[in-house]
Image 1 (cartoon, rainbow, N blue to C red):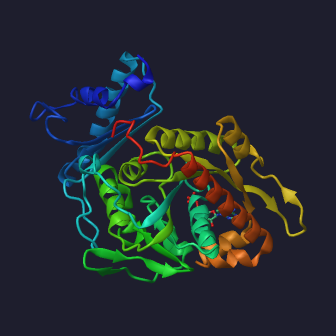
Image 2: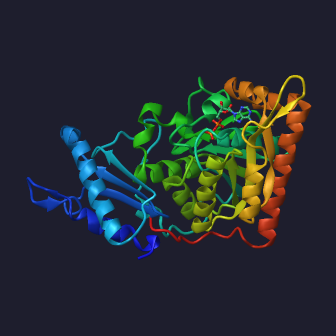
Image 3: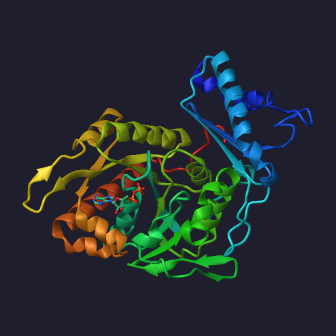
Length: 380
Ligand code: ADP
């Protein structure tokens, strides 16, 4: 059996072997299985467990882990990662806005474009955290706005929203008009972030249906107005939010951010394959932290400059450019002043070049008719 054949129903079947001795019923029958996602050997299972039964969590986790691995071994299927998460039956919804928990099923098959006033949607993704995905998303949004476009930035990184800091809006509260959230207007863009809706300490429980609902709410219940571009900063890795986005919005394409090292490339490849599986056009790869320029002008290839470019080439993807390690880029991110990045002519030029290449790739994808609403090709 090929790894693909070990799908959602195979996982569910394996879970039917996990039986609660008290009731003699399995976890599926008991309705404890809230979410199963299978994608290229990566499996995620979300189980509902009452806080009263929290002491059983680790035991249940190892029983489920064993059952799924045994079933996979029997099927000769390889498991790359197996994540087992728990949610409490009633998870706090965000306080500032309504109806966050929407099931994946309600998003599937949703017709029409919920953002008809947004011309182009660009997602920014990465194989893993810390490679500068949010930095690129923020500077892409601000850079396109500097070129005269009307731009929105949606920070959907539910595991570590960074735009409140990067845009300097830590102390600003959300405002709403009826059911709609008003975006923050600063640095020439409109921005909305999950960081303003969820207590960051609770962000990790936002998986499966909660992540679907949170993303949908942020995207469609924000008063974006007319936009030329909406930039979406996705969570790192492969997961629920990208799936929801691809089902909900007509995305023009995705930009994958990668650092040059081999280990980062491997993760980025997975992100590329995920977008391709979701039917989202991959606009290209950005190499961030490409090299370091010392104050004396000498350049140091700390992480193996050019690695991401080679990866792009081998995958047949456009290379969108390299952004070096700039101390000022980190400082301006930490102080929430992205426009100051253009005060350094070299950095401003590399950011402008990146924005222009991404714009060009969006146009090319449009001309080739590749930005239609995608169809779902993985099991939710
Ligand atoms: P991610 O979104 O991938 O988790 P971030 O964009 O939050 O990564 O970046 C992680 C950290 O690295 C931040 O402190 C950011 O300011 C810094 N950083 C990102 N890219 C660069 C760069 N090219 N030069 C200097 N610092 C950078």
